Image (tube, rainbow, N blue to C red):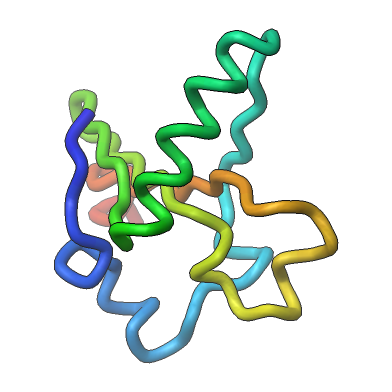
Length: 95
């Protein structure tokens, strides 16, 4: 996992058409209070520094980001949380 500037790693399609609730592929939930505290600390960092977390495995790429970057109408009434989008590069070439 690497931390990257959101502006440098944001999908080009999101620059012209911002993400919405249909753009989200994953939501992240902690298994216990200890893990939740660690995730909250990381979420605070990526929110303040406008970062995304990038994970690559084989042909899949995951970008995890703060929900604060979503348009307000898609954030809901919950506090800030992680969202994720998955890019399966191999799938882009299938017809």
